[in-house]
Image (cartoon, rainbow, N blue to C red; front, side, top):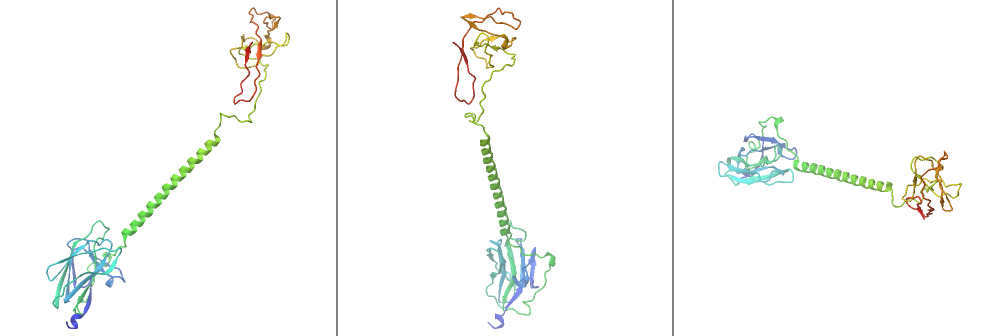
Length: 315
């Protein structure tokens, strides 16, 4: 081929030689994409046509994580179309070769590029590929490299999105980790509080089985105060000095005198096996006589958890 046919020129996606049909968006990343612009569509069936002069054309652009399995078809001068399936990258991957034509006859040609399949389920503007520039061999520098402004207002041009999937994944992971830490903290606090409460209850509980050795032991003391209940009758130590009745609990071995008398008003003694009469303060004798019974006091010893009074039994 002649030297002129070996010339290589670049045609921007916004060149006046490119005609778009359908819902196309313009975006771009300065210093990464040619002339800072790219064109994309997220609708099946949208297409564009490129008019060029030369013997070969190659299409370059950008793809990202959402570009996997996007399908486009390429046809020159109305011939058979070639379908290409794109692949994805971990992020924006620039200046990638999408398709290259076979050798053509040197001259004017038309390339038609159609969006056959785009991905759904992504955020707005994703799930596609982005066309950046066209590389033409054997072209005329005076016409092929011409560029023009987009028919869309600048304010409506679509900017490339960052890798939103990675960002969302990181945010969700952080939230889940924070929730897990919060749940573990609450469970630990509850367990610690329950353990502390159990220790306090054990410390404050009273052992009723074993009384304290420091407990005060109070001996039983005879009372000389009047009592409204039944009186206990004891054997007098002499004829003139009777024992005062101790205020012990009633048992089956005691005999109850009438409750209307004071215990120091009632005496009973034994003289040579003879009974003595019960007397009142007024000097009158009680016609009812109780049998004389010798009473024996049993002496107890030792320390118990619950101190019991001594028990009196008949001989």
